Length: 175
Image (tube, rainbow, N blue to C red):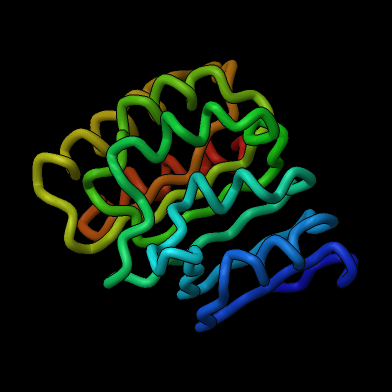
């Protein structure tokens, strides 16, 4: 990924770093990319996604690809993200490998009000059929809506019907 100004960018891939190291790096970061990284707190536990975003106050672009064996997304993650004052100031929010414990209903409520953040969500290949069905219902509603008064998210999961995928992609791009 190419970022406009290296002094405000942090791109970590396949790293294990401490919370203290991350705090040291965080003050001016606007563009943040985490790809299969583990951040460990002093007690040895893994930093959760919402805890990660709390420390990046100037963030405008966020890409997150978790380590699948290290769960950092829980049922409370999205509600906790909404409590972070600067979360709504993020312009680009991309997440991969989202598990089916992610609170899709809280996201859906937020999505219908979101007017500024570009969202791309790629769900984990192991999500349940019931969870896929709920995501597909949300996608159907987005496709069926002619005039969106919200920023249309890009949502993908393995098994999404290609026709729906293409229609959603067109809505996402404003076409």
